Image 1 (cartoon, one colour):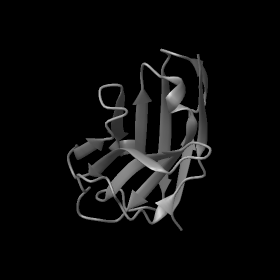
Image 2 (cartoon, one colour):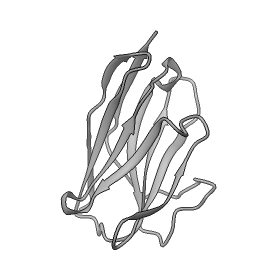
Image 3 (cartoon, helix red, strand yellow):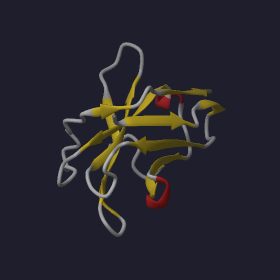
Length: 128
């Protein structure tokens, strides 16, 4: 059974930083597209960062324009863990953040991914 377990959400002020973690259990971590998707109240779900988890290192990383230059998706293959480092946070980043995974051969540049596995979500709140 595949489980994605997230942690690291919280409340920060504008300009602050947070790092989200997502550890995959029961998932073939050596390949596939993993990503972070957020949803704010009353808004559509938005993929903010995706990474193709390849053999040697993550490649094919993609970011939403709204977070480019501020967020970084990282991985620790030994720990089956993907991170989302979020810097220079803004109130508009307030949302529930979900880790997601798809057993595919690439991460599309469109960032439209048919994620088959989802974590439980972790809340990020940025105050002004």
